[in-house]
Length: 242
Length: 171
Image (cartoon, each protein chain N blue to C red):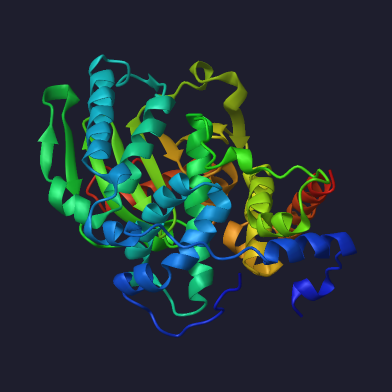
């Protein structure tokens, strides 16, 4: 039975719905669709790539200061979210990847290689048909971007243990009894695997929990998260942090 | 507005852009409330459509398009929460006061603009399901699937959204 059949609406609700149902279609401005078909939209073009590279530089420089690399790390959440924002749309546009990637930015500790990932997919690793689109790999930080037809997720991996005490207190939480940090506004979750700090941008705390819970393997949440992260990273040839 | 509920064919990106642009733009405009943001959203939606067509499973095509559009809209809302910007209504002076001097004919003619302005007074959490249900005609189940939230939540948000609209309509 259709659930709708069980729902009753008051008369005033039907009146409001009827009014809204009478709203007409709206024609797009002349030329808009042709512009989209023939030109790169303004908001996802080279400007965005430039911002993305700037964010990569910023993170690279931050890494170069020696803030991480020891036993404890504090993920630069705001920078990682900004990095996700400016790279997710761009990296999920295959044509942009083809035309812009395959080069190295910076040098030394701040080197961040940008490589195009072949078309292989591990959609089963994330919900809603996500496929891996790209990776930004540095010496101390890896970003993997997964995208579906309607959304994108970035997974940042840093070696070390998360220093949760240095993250904003209001975001501290636990997932299956394991310390974590989350921000529902930016949809950011910081979790700890055996030897890596993992920052996930684009999934809520409950979604992260659901994804990890789907792994049929023994062990704690951190063990299973590590296994999942290992699945993600192993395909790219990185060390399996689990 | 009504939607084409089914299609067994997977159109090309060009076909989608040309054939369904009016539908996509209408959804975008009803969610954004102004043409500037609607145009940006349509551009983003068409790019997502291009990426997603390869994996599209034939079915309710306009349902798929509306899902992409609402997700893209909600992504933008989340980003705007992180970087607040001042919205720019197209014609803010066209709000119709309920004074007796306004003729019924004029009120009727401008009703869509008035309703659109009222929709924009709803927070996105209420506006999106109300638009999907009452403007586009999707079922509660479809909306719950679109937004990945429980059907009870969909129902309560639509009820509250309609209630707020009723209050404003009766002022």
